[in-house]
Length: 240
Image 1 (tube, rainbow, N blue to C red):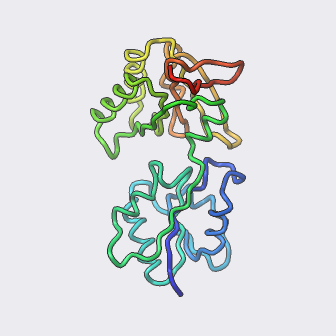
Image 2 (cartoon, one colour; image 1 turned 135 degrees about the vertical axis):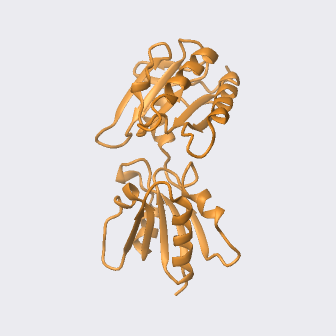
Image 3 (cartoon, rainbow, N blue to C red; image 1 turned 90 degrees about the vertical axis):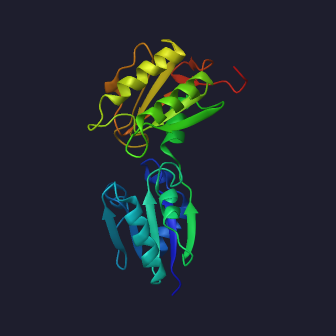
């Protein structure tokens, strides 16, 4: 039996948003590898081994998946959203060696795009995505990228804005945004999009507070042209 590794995105939460390509890979898999809550989204079945692990052992997970595939197993490494957006695809390639088995990257609907769709079209013009966690990069780098993106008038999508371990960081982010963008810029908080716990909130930067975000929230900041249309938020496609 020839082994392979598929790195798959499970989407933002709603099972209807898992792509048919990912479902087919899971149906063929002998093993599923991933972070504990993502593996929990995969239904157990006979012949399928689930390998759940902690969030901070990405490289160990990648090595396990490759070792299993070298032994002839059919392995799906699961991420939420899209595996190439702050997720497991890049971690896998960090440990790939010359004897690597067949590798496939299966895209998914990332939380940023699901959140934007629920809000309207806030990413309708040029935008960037920034991970606000400083676990894998230092805060000065985050701040530099944040300031430059704001000065360039990008719409911005933020992942991992605020956690229990670093509750103060997002307050600093909001102050930087007020300094660079002004108090009237629109900011949206999209929490647990596509799940039963979904909540959406759009306010100005003057009204925003750190408590509006947690680790299940995608935060989207508009550019200078972003505006409301009833309950919707959108960024015009013409240059601002």
